[in-house]
Structure formats: structure tokens, C-alpha cells
Amino acid sequence: MTVTVGIQEAKAKLSELVDRALNGDEVIVTRRGEPVVRLERADHSGQRQFGLMPLNLTSDLLEPMTEAELRDWYGE
Image (tube, rainbow, N blue to C red; front, side, top):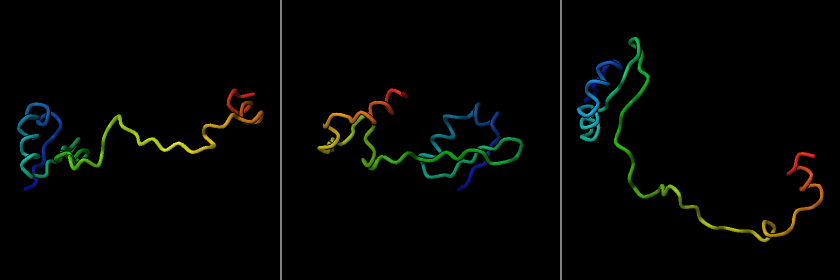
């Protein structure tokens, strides 16, 4: 089911609208009658792990910079 609400109503009913989105409803928020935002359930599939980055160092990353790279780095 699609639910469409204006921003003012969305402010007043945010908890209710979030619950509806969690239960599978499509929630569209409008501004002056134009759709601007859609609320939907966040993806918790484990594909995103904030703050964790795989460590893939290549050998050139560990090598000292050339004179030209140092000049570029320092903006000279």
C-alpha cells in the first residue's frame, strides 16, 4: 500500500510512518504536492559494514614517493 503525506503531517506522525514503512508500505513525503522523499526499510543484509575497510595494500603504496609526487602532495 502507498501512503502519501505532506511534510507537516510527516513531522507529526513520523513514528507511525516509520512503522508503516517497516511493515512494507511505501511512504512518500511531499512538499507543495510534489514527492520529495520515500521512506523504506533499511537493508540489513550485511553487505555494508560501516567503519570496516578491507586492507589491500599494494607494494607501490609502501614505496617512498618520488620527488614529483612529493611536490604534487605539498602543492609546490
